[in-house]
Image (tube, rainbow, N blue to C red; front, side, top):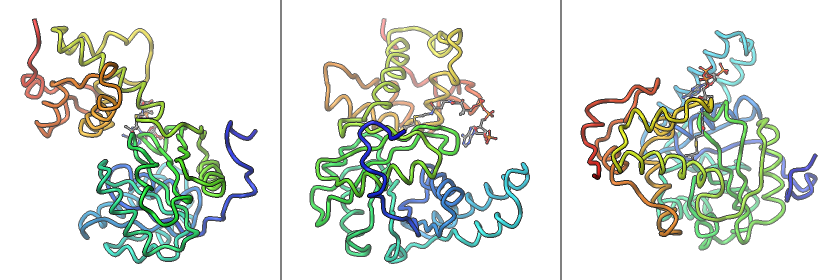
Amino acid sequence: KRPAGAPDPALAREVTKVGIVGAGLMASQLALLFLRRLQVPVVLTDLDQARVDKGVAYVHAQVDKLVGKGRLDEGTAAKLRGLVSGSVDKSVFADADFVIEAVFENLEIKKQVWAELEKIVSPEAILATNTSSLSVTAMAADLEHPQRVVGVHFFNPVSVMPLVEIVRAERTDDVALATAFAVGKKLRKSCVLVKDAPSFVVNRLLTRFLGETFAAVDAGTPLEVANTALDPLGLPMRPLTLLTMVGPAVALHVAETLHAAFPDRFAVSPNLARVVESGKPLTDRDGEIDPEVAALFEVGS
Ligand code: 3HC
């Protein structure tokens, strides 16, 4: 069944090479997913060779792990290893037909990346952004061919989370949108079309969830209590473990974007800002609270 709002799948462009701008946490997970499901050349770029090498090494390590778990045969794994590469030079995107950007969440940086990319890729190439909360319309505003820009928002961990939010910007055309849905389907994700509104849908809900957890702590509820209060609901993760997985800086950026858009509905907790400033996660991967970071909190009466 065609997802609500998705255009005719026959309009979708074939994707024979994928470009990933960025080689960080989301970008390298995206590289792995596109590689596994599309089995076409996937090329990563980043600002320096060390980051590029780290991104490619992550993909290789995950391919090895899949072989170890018996999920991938050695022949396919060898093929996949040969299909992934990285470079600091974006000209490797010249023949890519689908380029997804997962760089730092800053509108000006993203606009610069798009402007640079537009000089390299063909006018038909689809340009996707994995932004978690920025306006896709604003990102594409100064481009020569804004109709091929589309939001394709994945969730962490990328290989496991089934949802993808697909964002139609003001000038996105049906070809770009149909291609995004077709790619999402090949990646075996559930794609939903969402409005190009601040933080789309999921991050609004998650920010409410995390924001209220922080609000309770800001007001004096012990961290441990706020973090475990919902345990009886059987959610897959406690709020502060989720914060660690998403990354405090990303969560703060989403909260700030929502606060700017809806100041009466979304607050930014100063304690969340303190976690980001500390440069350390508030919990470990198992959700254990780090007492040193917790000690930085200032709570109200
Ligand atoms: N990175 C990559 N893979 C991970 C991972 C991680 N950090 N954590 C777990 N996984 C994988 C495991 O390898 C395993 O994969 P497999 O089944 O292929 O072997 C699978 O997830 C399940 O792992 P476990 O059985 O060890 O763990 P759980 O049953 O505890 O599930 C979870 C882990 C799927 C992460 C679950 O806790 C969960 O769903 N948590 C909520 C995640 C969530 O809400 N994500 C959205 C965040 S918001 C976001 O990303 C948007 C952004 O814009 C801010």
